[in-house]
Image 1 (cartoon, rainbow, N blue to C red):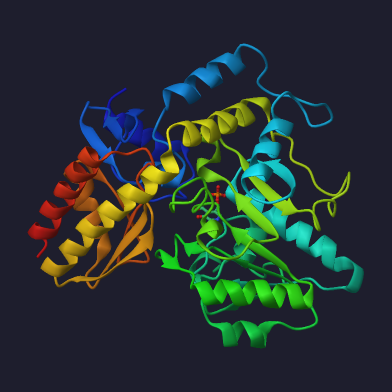
Image 2: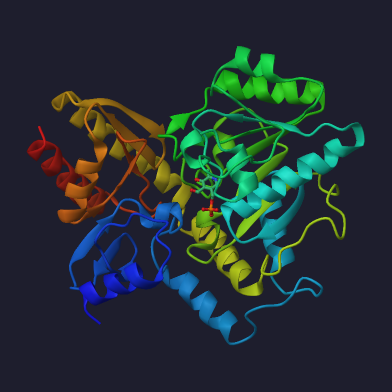
Length: 394
Ligand code: PLP
């Protein structure tokens, strides 16, 4: 089928929830993808951070092939070989507790919301405080938590008991916490919100007030997790440990998987019958995630994210000196952004036409989340393309 027919098929049969670039991707490897005509692109935004260790990592492909020959799905009324092992690894790598598995970021957020509300049920505390410009997913619960009105418009009344406060504003948080509050939920770096980094003293305060008031500190690491920010989990850049950590995206290197890690205090709140997910923690997804964790360790990818992130950020800061329409360069590790005082979509579209995949968020922020195993040569090649686009738009 040719490109136009393929796109027409989407128009005819796929519910049009997405605005898509005119690009049919047929093959991918590492930080490169190829379209239907065979044109090559460098990918600085692999699958919205899903392909965090690059597309089709050969070790993940092998692990999946091995698993496909054994068993694809085992329901959760039985045990499978890998779910416990993966939970153990995640706990070892973060903090003592237990894990619940599901299939996506939104579903993992739902799980965290349910856990918090179930814990609060004994003294009727259900209110969850979330942040302005946050993004937690599109299901009605995750949307209720999301601090951006544009996503909520037209869906009637969402879940009550959510309150949004300005990010990094200690006084606003202090004022919002009351006797009904059961949790504070935030991203350590807001991804969709434009790569807004949490201040250290802010997270210190969240931890302190949560301890004082017996409130859960829930950290959404769906986008920041798995090495992206120069630590395996972003909170490890700070002096705090959350009560519940939410994971998804790059955890399965492309295979859908979501998870929450709940610390020991909260790890038995969700008892049998209170929560479930048919596909959650399947042997296929867990085999992919286990291999992903091993690859991150064996290939020292957390260190690479930090080094390559520093290199990339410095080059972007150089661009800022040269182009007066770049306001700011920000982010940690390989979770970076340039905020512009011109429209970002034109830049992102020009990059794609020139062979570089990047994302524009919030109208004027160019978001760059390259795979954490990217190397300097490809970063330079991608940034040279970006430089050319910036020059043409000057
Ligand atoms: N949380 C954060 C921080 C995200 O960036 C996203 C998706 O972009 C989600 C949650 C929702 O994840 P999913 O699209 O897998 O439901």
